[in-house]
Image (cartoon, rainbow, N blue to C red; front, side, top):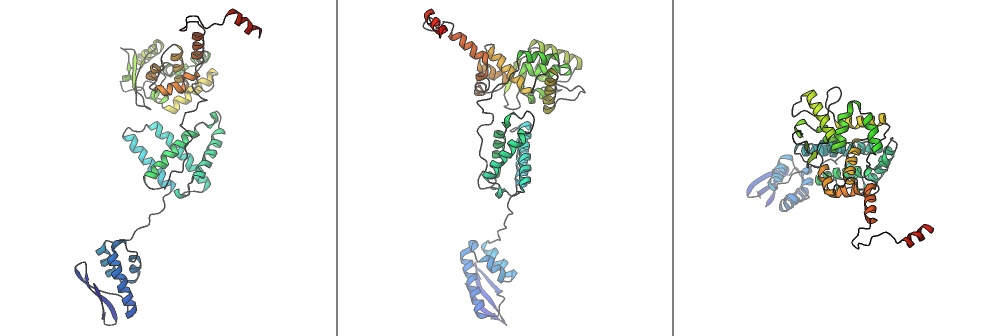
Length: 398
């Protein structure tokens, strides 16, 4: 309870607050003003730290008594945080990616793909002169997709901008980070289906003629060609392969794949085995040394492998000879030779569902084999499936 007292020409408040005696100047000579101020002080004290009167009292009370009263009830001024920007969000997302890489929860190659999309979106926002997260809306993100498609399709061999679905998924993941950290109220990115889940696209294996042309023009890339051809490794696994993973005594390569973290065991084809033995004898490498080296002795990295395979394709007259087509080729080879889908999935370090969706429907040899089985006359009925001669004649007439 506080009472109003006059000390000289100024009014002051006296009494007990929180069990302690207090006395402080109200900073006014007017009795009515002092009385109204005292009422507001008592009301603020009764309402506690949630009272809306504290900002007002801060402007009229002397600093020392105001600080003492505010501390007593636990009130502190809420500092307005500046609105988050895209630059702050992307920096935080980058830090999270580095953490996940350190914890082996994210592959470096995947993080690099994330960074590429973030850079593209940053370029788009810069063109639009937008920097604040609150200004990034769903319509804006949809316009980014159109902008991105236009940029991709201007490039040679753009493959119809099929990577936009992946860009959308990456942006959705980035804004999920912002949502978790209360930087945005909702995720503005609409997914474009499952990345890579395109029913009209599948395996793109080389033909036998393509492989023969490539083999004739390998030159210094022979080992890389054979390794991709007979292991089906992704580019990241091919360039990361070390000699400790090549088991000459068992004629196997055992590797933990970088993308899916699956342990695969790939039998070494006789031609690849000869090339590996020759390279090992020539270099006498350490177990930790990389298998694939550039002509100047430096280890391969993924972009360099990609560019050298494309260059090999150009020399051989085989367009788009990217490393992944060798993976498609091995998968299709195995399926056509009678390997089961599970066996192919185990060899490639993939899922059965991926092999079924990505390879099996696009293998003409498999469909022809099914056709021959259906027309062989060896069904359960035992009478055959070939039409009677009379029916066959009628079909020929028609």
